[in-house]
Image (cartoon, rainbow, N blue to C red; front, side):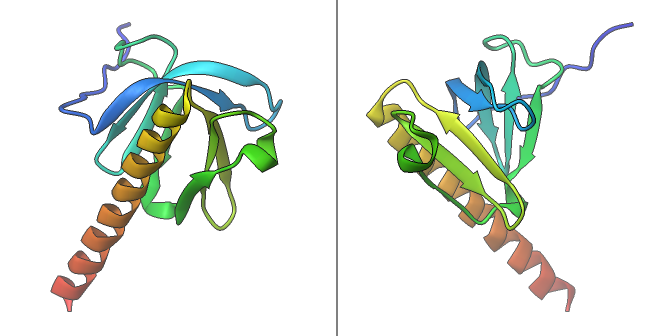
Length: 121
């Protein structure tokens, strides 16, 4: 049985980040890919099968630095009303790049949703 390959075309950003697991709160290094309004994490670099996480950014409201919350340098969180994903970049520049890219994806996904709702009326 073959594993499903996810089609990744021209991602907005990709690279290694550490992510905090939701249940055990352990930090794991993953390859993250931001494409459109979805953030994927994979165990291996540029091997796009069986993501460990699929984060639909349309349900998230913000992304911001979280070093005070996580006590980890270069950390940031992606927030929704009932969920927080914590991640750590390798440098301050990488963290800022991820925050900008994810923030842009959140804004664009909300704009698209709003436009679709307006067109349906």
